[in-house]
Each structure stands twice: as C-alpha cells, then as structure tokens.
Length: 395
Ligand SMILES: O=C(c1ccc(-c2ccco2)nc1O)N(Cc1ccccn1)C1CC1
Image (cartoon, rainbow, N blue to C red; front, top):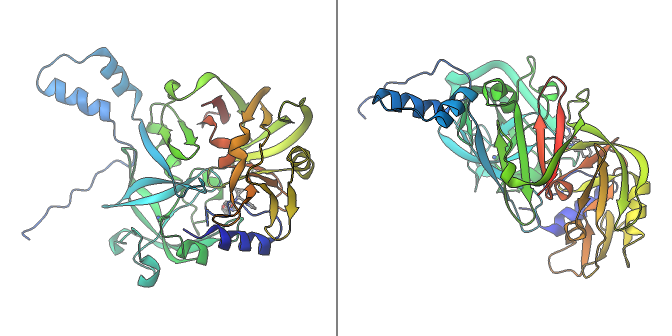
C-alpha cells in the first residue's frame, strides 16, 4: 500500500483532480475433470430443496420460495488501509482466491497473473493462467483517471463472488500493471461493476461478472454498503433491509457513458439552505473521494476554518483538528447527508497535523464522482431494470 506521502506527491504532480489517488489506486493417481455446462450462478436454496426431496422430507415454503427466486450472495468489503482509500473483496477465480477492488466506475475484471514478471507478484495472490482456457486473440488495456492502468490477455474461467458462480467468465489476466498497482501489495486486481459497454477487451468486448450472472439472480440488483473504517458488504441479487434505516429512494440512471450516472439537483453545506443546481455525477466505489464542481467545493471549504487549496498537496487541506460541516446532496428529491467526520480523508503524510479533504474539485474529469467518501454513509442499490436506477438509503 503506497504511503500517503507518495500519493500526495503524485497528487501534487497531477495538479488537478485525480480519481482515487490510493486505489492506484482503484488482485497422483488421476482425476476426472468435470466440466459444468451452465455459465451462470449456483442456487443454494435449490440445493437444499433437492436434498430434502432426496430424503422425502417436506420442503418449507420459504426455502421453496427462495429456490424459485434464484441465487443471491454477499461478499465483504474490507478497507485496504486505515483511511478507507479502497475496499477489498475475496473472489475465487479458478482455484485461487484473490482480493479484488470492486469498482462501480469500470467494467473490466482483471487480476495479477502468472503472465507477469515474478518480481511484480511478491505478496500477491494471482491468477495462474490455464492455456486451455485462453480466449484466442483477445487483449485488454485500461487506463484510470488517476493515471494508473494495466493490460494483458483474456481467459474464460470460473469466478465465484459471495457464493454466486459464473462458470465461464472473462478473466483479464495482467501481463503488465502500472507502478502504483505494482507497489500496492494488497490489491490483486479489480472487478468492474459498471456497464459492459465500457469493457476494454478487444476485438470482442467482454461482459462484467454481474452482467454474466444478473439474469439468474433472485433480482437483477446489487447493493453496496461500504463503511467508515470498518468492513461492509456487497449484496448480489437482493436488497437487505436490515442494512439501512428509513426508505430507499431512487433516481434514474443514464447509461450512455457506461457509468451509474445520475443528476443531483442541489446541495447544502452543514445546516445551510439547499442550493438548487444540477450536478451530473456518477457513483464509483473504485474512487476514494467525492469530486464536485468548483463552486460547490469552494462553498464547502468556505465553512472550514484554516482550509486552503494547496498546490503542494494537490487539493484542499485543513487542520486535522477542524470540525467539518456535513455535506448534503439532493438525489431523487431527497437530502442525502454525509457526516462532517467522513469528509476528513487522511493526514497528508503519516503523522501530519494537516489533513486532506474528502471533498475535492472535479475539474478535468467532466462530471462529478460520488466515491467512497459519499458512499460509506449510504446503502446503495444498483438496479439493472429496463430503466436502470440507483436507490439510496442512510446506513
Ligand atoms: O478512474 C476512472 C476510470 C474508470 C474506468 C475507465 C475506463 C476506461 C475504459 C474503460 O473504463 N476510465 C477511468 O478513468 N474513473 C474515475 C476518474 C477520475 C478522474 C478522472 C477520470 N476518471 C472513471 C469512473 C469515472
């Protein structure tokens, strides 16, 4: 995991806005090989129905209902460092379990692999490619907003997330990764959860894991509960009403750019009144911070004593002792509040008394990005219905 110092230096170098500066951040005898014929999810409830029936036992209605509904699953989302710079989730690819960064801002499932120089694999779990599973002629290459990136070739293999199996999922094996990924020994790759329309595999675009399995799930949804300095979850195929308070409220998604893109209709700083303004934004679990329009960011830090937009550190900073106002975004007509405490991202360098803001300027990106700083106070339902929607509720 890169130090804050190296990242702030990168930020300073980057000058303007970079996404997710730490995601970088953003992986004898004989045996009979049984090949499963389906390419979609397993159904735990159905297995229980089959077993009960095998022994002529009655099948409880709730199990029968769950079986008919289709599979569901839950994967943990564990902070990759003390500042929630990224979250990692276990994914089994073939016979190896890797720690991947689930990223609703991209659509490639890629992993560190046996195709890389062994020096890049120290400390990593990695995908051991099976030449028999190679997708002939397929390559991939992705560049992220923070300047990081990776490239490689493609294999079709079993991918299990939260107990839900895609038996023949495009797995993008890295042959090379950028320096920030090479130096991050915790992240073994990314699992993209944006729309497959921005997947980078060529000549034939690949599907995301969720795109592969969604039609077999109990419901075509996944729900994200990232947490502040604690492990959260990704729920697949269902909405867990125990994970939020109040009502879920929805906003339609524009999928034209391949993102979970929506419009926020206003904002407020602390206890101030709502300013009505249209903010084009995406939800992005793979981006650490909350990137907003210049005017909004200025209005926010005007209420933070001792804050400044630092060229040295490449963004707004303030005394770590500052009491930060909350930030409210109006989404689907509902005020979604981020507690002020969540907007202190991290000291600019370990031990510093100057802290880097969780809210930063979106200049150079082209839209706002509601990354982890925003998401970690919400339960966010991503619904792949005929008109895709995002649902928000307070955790
Ligand atoms: O990092 C990415 C990002 C993700 C995926 C892709 C991509 C290229 C090709 C397919 O996907 N390109 C990105 O750049 N951010 C955040 C960001 C922050 C700052 C500037 C640009 N972006 C995408 C989600 C918005």
